[in-house]
Length: 351
Image 1 (cartoon, rainbow, N blue to C red):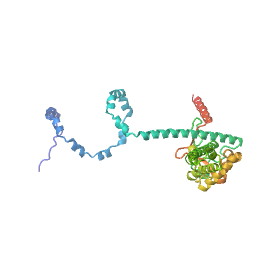
Image 2: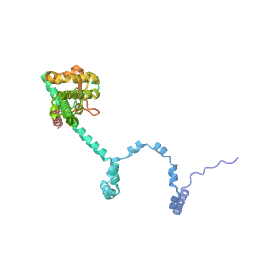
Image 3: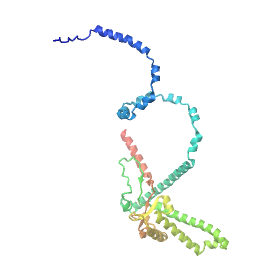
Image 4: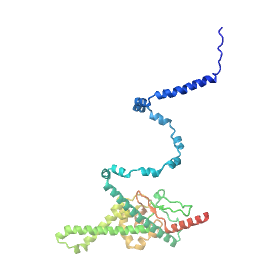
């Protein structure tokens, strides 16, 4: 029977010291013989890159951990922005820019049109907001004279109540905010302005078209301008023109041209879309409302739904409608003063 192998035990420390010493002497000699430049020349980096599975690498990367490990403040502190800016050669960058090609790719006509449209829209919205502020002022005075409680009158037709936004009262008295009045009943100042503007615009265009038509068709036939402008035919044509002016746009679009400019629209009393019959009836009764001013138009100021006589007869109402833009009521002077006092009190209490 063979003897069991005997464990020689750990190598003596002299043995390991000899091996380590030999390796330390041989390794530098071997490394000095390796030509790293030749190895790098033999490497095909394109083949190596093609063999890399970028998706697998990205899947194994924990980007959240990488981002959390970045010390943005330390990086920003080590950046010398003055040196970076000084290193930029602005003249070289400008020389490489092809300004002619850049200007050629820009549609200056469209850019100018967009800027002009934005300026015009801002101007129109400014006028609308001031009219809404005036409406709120007159409504407030009327409510005081009639001793109405705040919120006693409905703000919008029944079908528009859910869509009519109501801004809640802020708990902070120093906070200013505009109120969206889309779908709310239009106030007296805006409505009077739209009515006067439509009368002026309609009669002006009628006079312009009449003068041009008379020049081309009447004068060659021997009709004098003074005779034509004061005759019954002129009155009939003017009345027909104004009938079409107030009827057709409301039947088709729910508003006359000036009403659209000032941001108001005609709806049914419940908030629905006005049809041609209601629009025609409203237009026919409108002269009576204007003739008996106190009875026909005073409902805009004192009425619960701000409806005129022709609105009552036709079953219609007028609301704010700025289209896709938000109809905003500006912050009143009283709210500005209240906010200023609130901020001052808050500052005094914090001291």
